Length: 199
Image (cartoon, rainbow, N blue to C red; front, side):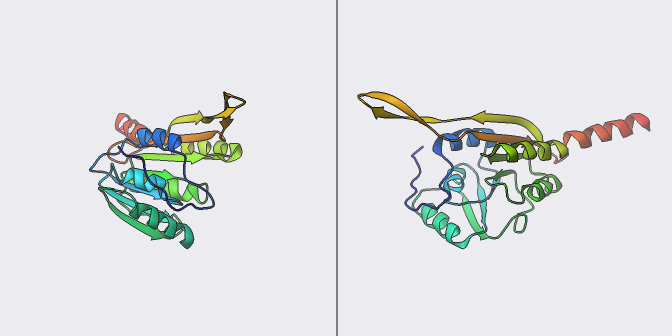
């Protein structure tokens, strides 16, 4: 698949291509999925998802960033129906998402609550700050969502004195969450089983 074009930048910058590759693998999107992104920024993740999912809804609270995402989206070929919403999550989150990406830490607990309540099957959150990562892991656990935590760091090579050295990017903590196909969490299933045994 062709690399995406990002003719417009935003102050926060896009989710790096290597991080997007891992993210898309964890989301495992298919043509029947409705994917939702919280914090669209440059639209890089939205564009990648719109080449795989059937529908994409991207939320961004800053109008200038939403305009950047809109322009970048227009510079790429995508197959999905895409809706960009200027709003701050959890407001504006759809009720029928199959997969959800949280690209920032603002209001993430309310977003996770919405994901559990509406039965989002796959939830991924990227975090770059250690303290936020710890809190987010607990938030995923409290909602019986957490299935995996991945920490990785990317380094890009550059020429230095006729040889190759590396410039490291900040580490990324990727939290991966899942509910069962019917939207019931593992904890809910355990409760149902306990009730059945007790009856």
